[in-house]
Length: 132
Image 1: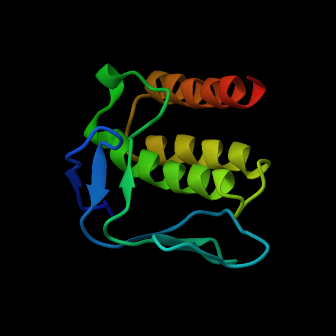
Image 2: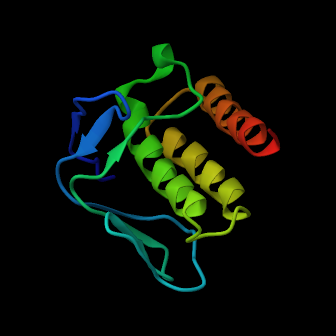
Image 3: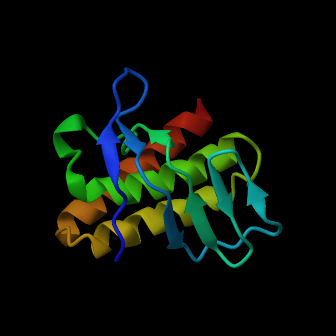
């Protein structure tokens, strides 16, 4: 399992910034290739994130629970959330992205109770965000 190389972001809006490009097969297949200045998502489900991409960690998860094991899941999840927010992907993809977040947390070796809690926090955040 590849791990992203990152630094702490020096600013308020984000927590991390990617130091090197990061690539992962996600299992999420857009209908057409997505090309953003900081990432691409191919129809083959390969996500490529450019160095310099900044993200805020796991949104909706309390700071106390933000550990190094959440870096990779939050990075990948944030890219998908950004792609949805910017209209590259439909809102229906959000549930798939949340499930991928859960799988990535499991791959990081988090205990099942923690994985389930993180997933519920992420799912709860989307419900609050899109209902209000």
